Image (cartoon, rainbow, N blue to C red; front, side, top):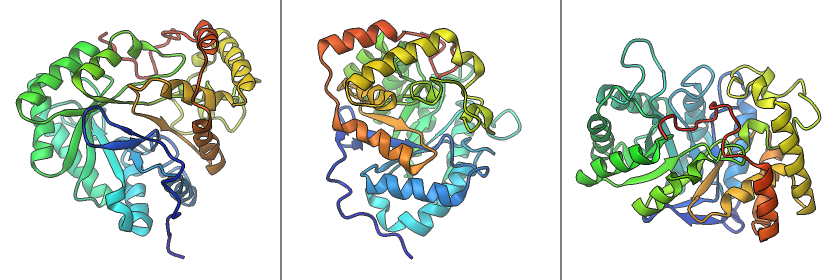
Length: 344
């Protein structure tokens, strides 16, 4: 039976303006980093995308190397786009990225003009799209002049292959640099995608202020610290956990240290007093800051997705709660594996 989106899909979701642009993003977006590769059931991917859109999540975030194998998330999304979402294309915000290793040879990664524009063409082909709404430089390439990376992003817009451009995991100084280079060419930098959660608060030192000053949006990835900020690991590591699955290397055993788990249990107690799950509180905590435009969810089950979206029912924090949360969260959990910029 052909998919028909829920007519009430825009009633409950919150939408926030992305920096000083005209673009609105949902407070919660869906990331396809995990659970959308060839190792994952296509039927479950379909259920996740359909339910997300029915809940008002209009932003689907991808990258060239998402899978596994790399490229398969875009290819699977492209199939579901054709079969389910083509009538809704103008309602959707679809983003992709390039920069991390994707194909063999010296130009299969990095921020060169060759790498970025070739990758974008490949991404559009895999997804069957004429354009993406946002194209990101996925990471800093220290061996490519920033003028070249900026020029490639400008070309993506000028060629009609991207409506907006963004960056991910850039430090505050590097952000100011590439924003200036893009502005000189008449293309604003729409958004920054950093890792940000209660165990990885590096963006608070300088980056959030920089984004506000430059008129950019912020969309946080790894908001739940790859599952550490959920109840999944509070009593041990379940057999079905991502850490035990193909492509689950973004969460590693050292993340599950005694200190991190003790902090997670203390935060869970605060969440319970608020009438929320730990995951819901962690998402609400990120959205407390108006500089955060959206938060990227990762979900393997529809029920998990629905539980996360319920975080929007309680976004208010009192000063006492914030102080207690601060006492159990950390600027950096001690392991630089969650996307923290390496050139602060």
